[in-house]
Length: 79
Image 1 (cartoon, rainbow, N blue to C red):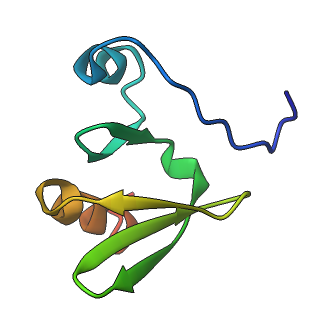
Image 2 (cartoon, helix red, strand yellow):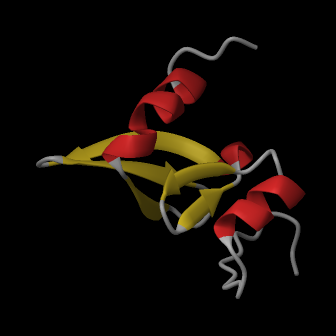
């Protein structure tokens, strides 16, 4: 695999287990984890909030449950 290639992997495992194994990944939806290093920008479409990931310009829907945490991470980073 190329270094700057965005990968889409399907895992047959609980997402909570993957979060423990890879704590740097962020949950955007009940069935999605993203690598924050690939964050590009936000997009609003009617009532939906969408994260756009680089380099392949992939759109991932953000659920209301995780929106606040993600906004804090990407809009007002504390680091």
